[in-house]
Length: 432
Image (cartoon, rainbow, N blue to C red; front, side):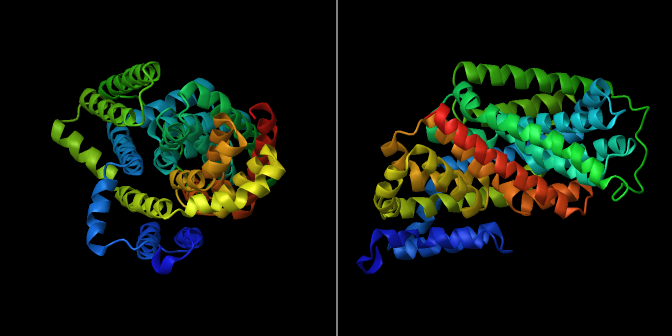
């Protein structure tokens, strides 16, 4: 440390990151400032920073950023070939949207499935919105309800998809296989959020009916018929995804396997969808380019965390906190660490997980907290932040749903937070 400061001062850039994450500054700029500050505090030679960034390209965070970008590229292929619309319309035809409850359930399932497959909330719901809104508007569903469903059901897809960035990150940090992750974290939280979303959507529909409504919405196209190319592409996409995911789970394919799943699925979908190789590549690259900023942010985030760890900042924090938390017990620790993740750390969910794991992993090991419970804490800490504040995810889903009702969405979000905290307390006794 510079000036032989106590290693605890290495956490200053982390505190700054937390503060900046709740401002209007671009996330990449936030992380860049913190990297520079952490480099100064830990006496990193300026000339070595280029090499540090180079090493980040092969880091776990760099890989997560790449997976997110590739997922956006796959989403562009699904949209270009018409597969996304075909899948959503298939669900709407099977479940139906003739009643309010069916319309809500159809929207929930559509959002969850597509987010789980693509690994992106905004990207998947952006594909769904223009298809589903005319259908549900026809039976009187309000924009407030659609915003609620897009946020809750969409994020539930992030809990469950085997190769979503959040799931890949948690499995890598905890060493759990996919089945154990689902049992300990994914399914319990998904059930809680799904139930809260469904019943709160019904409640919101009653409260907002006649207050908010869709205007100037085109009637749903009753004569929609998918082309042969779209049907072939959808079949190729479905078979390739199921086969590769099953193969990956059987062989316990690591995080890097997600890259192969996305690329192979994108190629097969595009080829069977009638795209030329040039068109396929161009579409994929354009889609991926939309999230280039997130990839850059993750590349910068890696040295930021490594500098703090190398200086002993996390170890010193554990040293100070261990006596206090040891006297409190696992349940109190589970609740406090979850609250820290939800309300204390903003930004990307995967970055949240890396920070929280660095801060508390020593205490987790010292207390004997099970990795299953820690996986649940990480999942809630990373994802439930989106429900706690009217931030990017929440406002983004409002925009996609064409809603202006912030009040209802904030009430819903805080309800999800409350039930999630109750889940942590209950699971702390079950998982230990």
